[in-house]
Amino acid sequence: MRPNSLHAADIAHFVHQQTDLADHGEHGAILMARGEGVRVWDTEGREYIEAMAGLWCASLGFSEKRLADAAYKQLLSLPYYHTFFQKGHEPAVRLAEKLAELAPNGLAHVMFQCSGSEANDAAIKVIWYYNNQLGRPAKKKLIGRIRGYHGNTIATASLSGQPHMQADFDLPYGDRFLHVSNPNYYRFAEDGETEEQFSARMAAELEALIEKEGADTIAAFFAEPVQGGGGAITPPRGYFEAIQAVLKKHDILMVADEVICGFGRTGNMWGCETYGIRPDILTCAKQLTAAYQPLSATLISGPIQAALVAGSKKHGSFGHGFTYGGHPVACAVGLETLAIYAERDMLGHVRSVSPVFLAGLEAFRDHPLVGDVRGVGLIAGVELMADKASRTPFPPSLKVGVLVQERCREAGLVVRAIGDRIAFTPPLIITEAEIAEMCRRFGEGLDAAWAEMGAEAAAAA
Ligand SMILES: *Cc1c(COP(=O)(O)O)cnc(C)c1O
Image (cartoon, rainbow, N blue to C red; front, top):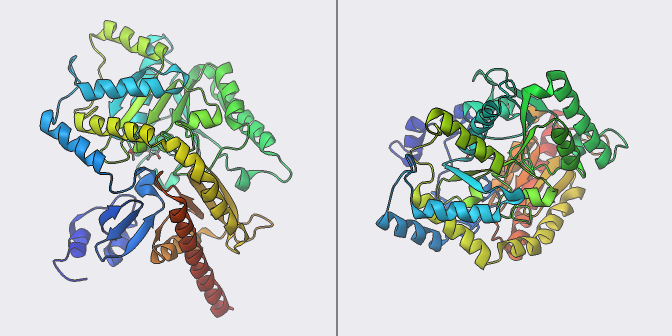
């Protein structure tokens, strides 16, 4: 690495996120320089198909000029205004109106923030506030799921079920965060258990936890329709139906974290539609602006909105808000993004290419490294397995997932290893030809990893 180079400056000064900082200090980072469609190029000129859409977000790819124009136009007219003290601006109002029109279950009131974490953090604050207005000060605990992901603020990292994001951060914080099992049917089903039976077992576990803690202490259940950061895990048949019956019985709010699934990822506008979820609160971000601007939204029900109004009568105002919440440039880009989705029939496109995407990955089931392939719309997880028949995973110390991820990268494909699950969430605009090329590169990466493991095993024997 040349001294004074970009890569040297990166090591010297830039603290990367969710990164092995020890390895980064030794090997440096891959720095991206430009993008076009579903492809990106790094500073060394290497080209990649971005099969993660960045972080499950760049739905319109990396060169949508209309979004750049929408941002520029807004920057010239009103580059900033806030939404405190009864102030506001047209882009925030129009986007809130649009989201209310699209929302499931009649959620008609919209709060804006800058990130998915803040959307969920705001949901948590609102839930606590709501139960205080209803005179239920003890009903405050929140239930998340193991491997669930809801963000990285103190509260949302506590709610997430990602132990490596809690270790040494003194999280989960306090005693309000509980977790139930990860509904990864392929990994955790008992022998002979059907998906429906597995779902019933998950619901029974939830109910047992609620009864142990006391329903009057439990405020809400948070779930992603498809677990993203947990490994692109689709729910087993009957899961949300069984879970929601338990929540309803015990008067517990359902929060749908649509930060990944929202805006077409599962082939419908919302994961809630794909899986029959009727949320009291919905959070979304990522594809809301196709990731061209940081923006998130928290959609709340009429009764929750009424509690916020009641609280204002008591305290003089709704004491919550962020300087950049509902930033006009981000909202203008969000409006343009939603207009593009509608004009180009993005849902229709996802539905038409999804079978090609899923079949392309399904074909790797026969690969010696692959145990399971599961997905919906344009999101899928490929689970690597040491022994397929007994569903025995590789020892984590082997880091097989990372090996596959790195060999894929060398083959010109960005995928993400989550443990030994390889996640795929390409930009929604991906074409059939690009899917074919994505699968070809994935095969090349898998084969290279497999050959390397075979060579190592032979050397060890
Ligand atoms: C990415 C993500 C978040 C957090 O969003 P940030 O914008 O990174 O704060 C929350 N929930 C889910 C499901 C996510 O995938």
